[in-house]
Length: 215
Image (tube, rainbow, N blue to C red; front, side, top):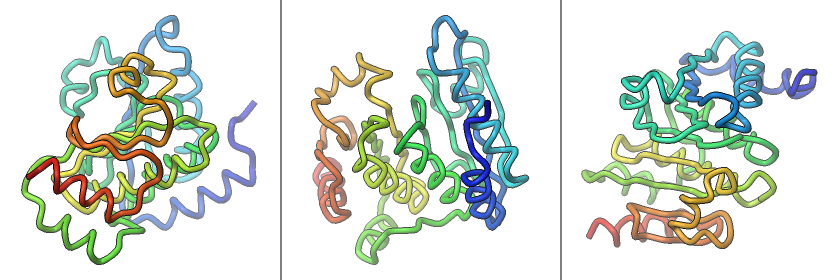
């Protein structure tokens, strides 16, 4: 049975067909006995690619294709690198299901258009002045209605600045990492390991956190 019904397929086709650039969904998986959702993710992104010629899938085994993993800075699986005309640093770790399906769709659109959709003038101006790396992680769960907003902001910032790497991590699939960062609720934003912002924060709060950790 298909994961995407005709209505959803039609909606994403319309969104993707309007993208000026092709987007590659570079998927890193592990053997099924080591990865509960790898098969589902591969089926999902294959169906997405079937909706539009503007989306293609490239699959790698994390434990085998080490050069490819290093090229995309992938150190765990399941993982998606969402790559447009260039690699903007958009990553999704885990299954992009339920609310997080919209995060994946937005990431594809952002990479395909090569432009952020929702940044205000002050945020855009600050990102244009960045000259230091920003590792921006957003911890999410599929049932969290506030998480896509936080994840989308991270993706938009990464598209706006070559210095920002945005990683959305499905917390329940990576419990050791979630424990390391003390994830008690989602969304949780972690900037360069030390900056911590809980909830769906406004852009200016994320910008101030970036400034503080880079100071």
